[in-house]
Amino acid sequence: MRRWNGWGDDAKIHPLPQAASQYLERIIGEADSVPDASFEQVLSAVPTSRLATHPLVSTNAAERLLHARGQSLPDWIALRSGNIGVYPDGVAYPTNDEEVRSLIKYAGETDTFLIPYGGGTSVVGHINPLPGDQPTLTVDMSRLNKLIKLDEIDQTATFEAGITGPSLEEELRTHGYILGHFPQSWEFSTLGGWIATRSSGQQSYYYGRVEDFFAGGHLETPIGPLDLPPLPASAAGPDLREMILGSEGRLGIITRATVRIRSTPEVERFYAAFFRDWETGVNAVRAVAQSDLPLSMLRLSNPQETETTLVLAGRERLVSLAERGLRLLGYGDEPCMLIYGLTGYRGILAITKWRTGTLLRSHGGLLVGKIVGEMWRKSRFYTPYLRNTLWERGYAVDTLETAIPWASVLTTAEAVIAALRDGLMDLEERTLVFAHLSHIYRDGASIYVTFIFRRARDPAETLHRWQKLKSAASEIIVAHGGTISHQHGVGTDHAPYLAVEKGEVGMSMLEAVQQKLDPQGLLNPGKLLR
Ligand SMILES: Cc1cc2nc3c(=O)[nH]c(=O)nc-3n(C[C@H](O)[C@H](O)[C@H](O)COP(=O)(O)OP(=O)(O)OC[C@H]3O[C@@H](n4cnc5c(N)ncnc54)[C@H](O)[C@@H]3O)c2cc1C
Image (tube, rainbow, N blue to C red; front, side, top):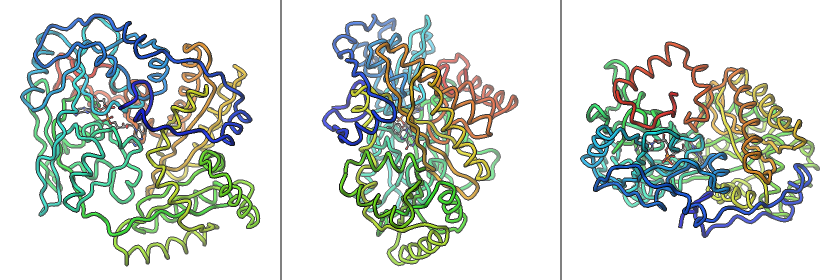
């Protein structure tokens, strides 16, 4: 069963190795484990619904609680403490376009806000109802979860938008195809959510970001249905598909989408290499990114993340062997780990592996083969479960990310890390910060930063600590010219920074489209646009 106040499946537990526990105590300090509110306690605080009855709408308190918050750290603080405050007034589970249309009509007639809800894995406040007098209805897309059509000539597949990552890939796998979109939230996030947030999967280098595979689809908007024909390309004016990507539930409810698929690759391998320091590693991955080699992933950890990853892996003997080996070879002081993936045909892979290895070596890389890469592959969707364990031990974890041209990658990463590392010093609290380049492009990279700090006994104080860190890092990102989000989207948490990237005219273009499609302002208010 899905955990109601944390990440993932209740049955999966990621233990914290003893060495990792000591490591955190050494860097951040010993933490207090503050007990969480129980489901029953929180349930008893859910207020009466303000919604008028509708055959598709449930006002059941448990369902409203389960749809009240996403996966951001403020969401966790609210859920774990039981201080949720605002709940949707109801939840509907439409099963076709007509039902979606009838919910939009009902919302218009009763002045009800609508929140399209995919897997609820948003980390920036996308699916949270806002306080106010108007009721809110969450539209859970989970029953729109079928494969509608597989076109083997075009290699496209049309799915209903509420389908999750595993179900979608399972449908394709039985026909010998793959989409290959693997965000770390893959287990629970949905096709509609990926489109609405401009999501990026771990192997987007090969399989593409969502804008590369989103071929077309269908939306229900307050002013009528919108069809986006699945054309391979179009010069017929601005591409409306680009408007829908990243629309965060503000422009309509995506009910189905056609995606570009490909044959299941013959081989997929993950390898690791080490560099003596971060700068050398960054220059090496830039060289690979600009060499046109058909890799599927390049993920370069900074020294702190390399150390933390090895400690958290819990394979103490292997790790100490690796550390000794690296030291012996002169890679011991600030080693940076690169995981790189190769996907495709066996023959092409052999050449790519050889050419990548040569390039990495010429840039100071030490190739260490498959073991570490395999470890990464096995834990790729398991790592987020550690957030639950850390929370229970008294530590709060969050991540943030940006993308920026190569010239600014090192300086921006350094400044963001420093802002987070020193951000709680005035409170006499320490933060563990580590980073990696998660998606690599010819002209730049995305920087993905994780930060861990101690929770306070008072949830409001924990939230205050998070706010200080998040705003310090966000300001640094935009001041350096980075995007406020490479993959998580805008939601509420990034909305104050959006205008820096879009500019005044850009913001009015977005607002005009939103107002045209949703004149009553019913769809997901306060997200993306304030
Ligand atoms: C542990 C963890 C790891 C993550 N890793 C990644 C990652 O690797 N890459 C990445 O890109 N993101 C990642 N995320 C963020 C999140 O998973 C993505 O933003 C994802 O795309 C959200 O999908 P969802 O179905 O859960 O959408 P939700 O969280 O339910 O909704 C997100 C937004 O999309 C809108 N929406 C959802 N469905 C529809 C629809 N059918 N029509 C219109 N609007 C809709 C909602 O209104 C909301 O504004 C991660 C999150 C977590 C918690």
